[in-house]
Image (tube, rainbow, N blue to C red; front, top):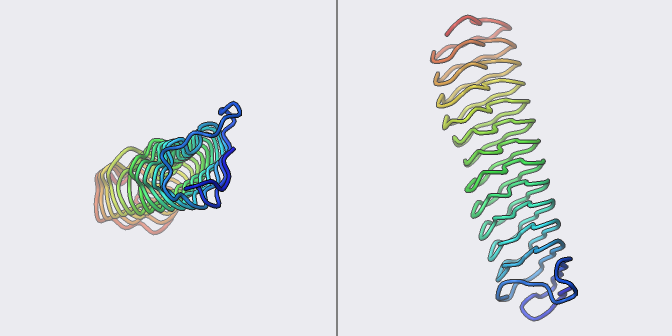
Length: 231
């Protein structure tokens, strides 16, 4: 146990794997206000301040990142200099290295993303593989592999496909589920624009609206099942 020692002021570190010896860190340099509990937690910490890491290998390689909250097995495991992240859940944000200001909550949420910043990913597998900025993904597999910036996906499987489309809004289960490079689309409702891949600037409001559209662009459908055969 290390507590409030030189260059680790107002801080506490407990590493169960230290076998009674002093916990291992990097070369500490005025690190302040850190709380770490878990196997190998803060093993590389040098100057980071006000971080909380609780769990197996949480904050494992964190050096100078600040104001991060990491809770759960491998949460924030690869984070080094990123700051102001909230990563909660098994493997939550486990691959993020330098990203800042992310909120990632749920098992495997944001698991493989390395550079995301300013994003919200909440739910099992939400934004699991998505590297982006300004994204909001809420729900099971929402935005799972959507790498484009400024996307919003709320609902099971919403905007889940791998791709770089940007500025899309998908609200509802399976909305924009297949989208790859399409941008500036709005799909609201179950299965809205669910088959869209590269179509752009479409607006679909209501269940099954524009449901088979794949490449069509500049369409507007505003009632249930409308334009459901448009491709």
